[in-house]
Image 1 (cartoon, rainbow, N blue to C red):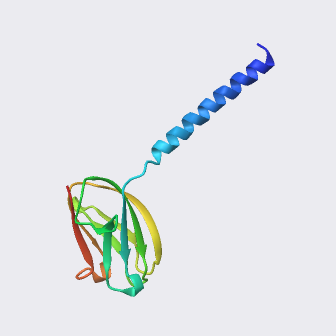
Image 2: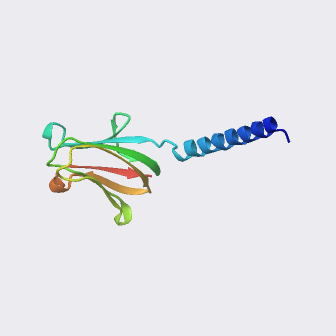
Image 3: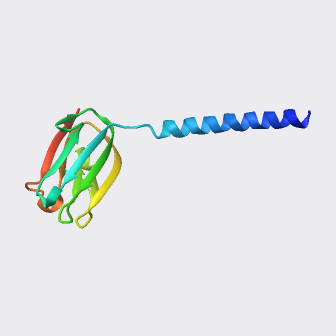
Length: 127
């Protein structure tokens, strides 16, 4: 085989491998619906979970990306779900934004601030 033809074949195979790798990477980074959680804006004793600007009351079972904005060092953001499942998105003392992807199963959920759980919470159902 001529060196030019061999080089062309190697280049073509390399391009195919790169295209397949890029396709696999894009598929693995599939986007999930985003939910926005906010706690302690202006140090307020308030916690919210919204989907496209509306308070979450019901969601379909599936995978969601939680974007949690913790604006106060005296609050945190946690989520309890069915069968003892729980997630701690932020801790007391943390201020900033965290993004976490979570698979939600059917059941009742409660987003809350642990130090002020008796009055800083939001409940929703996954169907």
